[in-house]
Length: 268
Image (cartoon, rainbow, N blue to C red; front, side):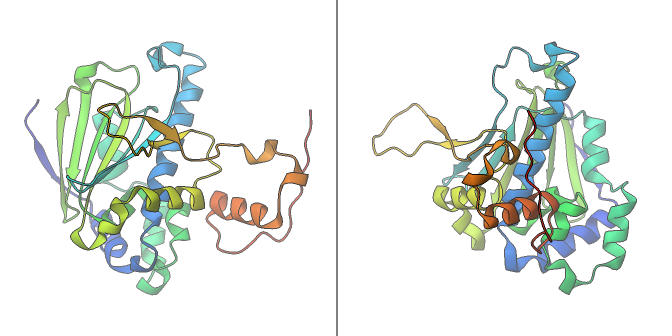
């Protein structure tokens, strides 16, 4: 593994982290919604890229998101076999904020407004929500199509700086490990996480996998899909209720109000 390098966060990132940690205490569970959403986007990007270059998937038959708890270590890991990132992309996407919309978000947002967690997704800064419940976050990634030796490990305690190092990463995609704070241990419960996924991420079409609950002791870990993964627009409107439309709209747009109206048309 290469020498670890330490970098300072851009000023706007430090401001954003402060807002995340100190203002979103009322709805901490949104960290999982945001990280799962990022993982889903990464898988969708790989699906698109692989249409013109199927070698990118390296023979993988299924693209999935895994959410796994390690109670002994006090960690939650959200991993995907999506597009992944190069080290330059990690620095650009996490260490700095190039998006002018995000700067506008910071300039216009006071701490009371920051409690509205729906704004997080609108401005594309959801990754940082991990620090609401974690005192350290480690991201391991490798860009699909890159050599295994060209992986990257990013780590930060969210206190002004982060470390980067090049590493051998066997599988393409991204893995985000949250070291959960002592006073947030409620999130180290599988059922708690399943409920959050059901609440916010049921509509995501990428399979979200968690360890299958079993009463028998076994050395083998089995996973099961915990989201419905049904494309909302493919369902018969007779099978849907008004609250289904409302929740889908809110999860898609991060709006906190129900839509004014909706049209459900299906064209063959």
